[in-house]
Image (cartoon, rainbow, N blue to C red):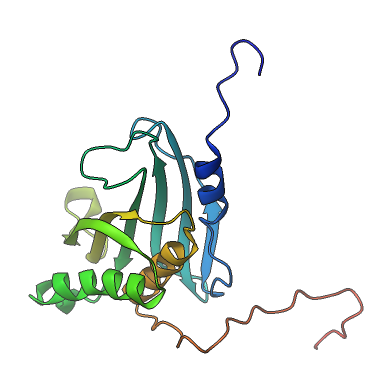
Length: 198
């Protein structure tokens, strides 16, 4: 290390960060590395995602990994995951009193289904209706659901947590999760010598 260089991140954080992108992501999901907030913990990393059907973006989200060697109040450990998911929903869903509890169960059931070990989970489910007025009066009414949650992973392997987050985004987008014994297939990239379809 030379003078002025920040110290290397701890090995535990580096190992955890390497597992933040789940393996075998469904073809409807596009993942990308995004900047992580810098003030929430000494070390952080983040991944963003969008869920598509054809060319329509149905849901967006981000998953942030926080690491503090000293822990923080309410974390129950050195790691904390913060998840955000936003998806368009049918207008009648925003008036359903069960929407919040059902959306929250999508998260906890996905974590349990992937065998993610966690503690101190908490969060909110928000439903929003947006109407345009004035110069935006012709804009269509939009209805959305937002889920914000955080929990403390009990292992350094973040892949089950990230896989659960991907399932949560698909459920919010109206796409059911794959059964546990079904593998995700990705289309093979076209090769130059493939025959062209007229």
